[in-house]
Image (cartoon, rainbow, N blue to C red; front, side, top):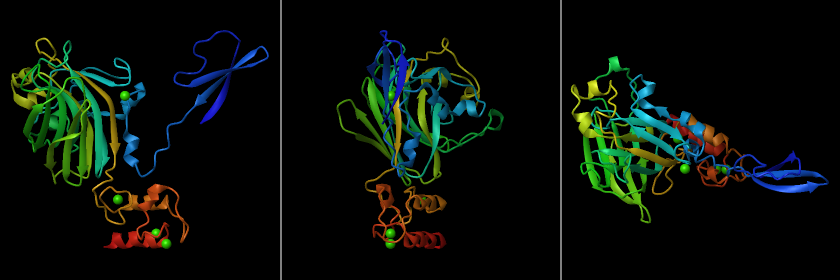
Length: 353
Ligand SMILES: [Ca+2]
Ligand SMILES: [Ca+2]
Ligand SMILES: [Ca+2]
Ligand SMILES: [Ca+2]
């Protein structure tokens, strides 16, 4: 924590410090000094490397850290309104145009790339434009993991989509809250719908190696496993992010199938878009429980490579000198309390193995 002084005339002032900073006033003769207190966020242990991808959506500028899947490859944006900490304070707010994530169809997707095993959690609300639950079928929002793919519209080929997701909103029963999970292998989707809940719902996907566990948590309840999916075809580095889509009837009624639909923007009317999606946060972490890592997979990402050397470097203490950062327990492959040449040699031998 540190403090700084701001000087002003001794007049009443309602906001002497910039937004969010605590302040107290000290009088020095006729000069009033405002002491502004800055409390930095707690330092992130460096072993939680993916936590750097977290977004609490309380800063309008963080939107640029997310890649918009359609725009980056020159497809039409299917977004009507999108902002962070603006329409909905502390949240990412998005209203999608007519769109869907099914088979080769693509909807709104804002993602980051993540390597290795991880857990992603988001707090999501999917409402209609003027109702608690959307009234157009398959209007949902949630989190998706996808095999990276970059093709301009003219280069597009069918049956190449590989992804899985969990969403909240309404599916085949418009106006009724539902949870949807969907697994798409080479452009063929298998979906499941289960009862949902109105309002904010927590969604989570744990990726451990090739296994994906999709969870949902309703207000005041515990996490419940919605679906387990095993995919050995997804690459080590995947896209992870937020999806939103609405009004399947208008999508399916558009002539020409996915290839034609993905290249146009269907506005409403004649469409019936009916989704307001809000994301309170998206948080990432490395799995810590129930996962076995190789002794020299120091950064716990499932592979042994130069990144593990970088990890060890941050911990090197020399023989017999104990490390202090708890993250360095991982870099102590022989468990003797230090990170030294023995631990470095173990890594080199694992490279050659
Ligand atoms: Ca938030
Ligand atoms: Ca590693
Ligand atoms: Ca040692
Ligand atoms: Ca050691």
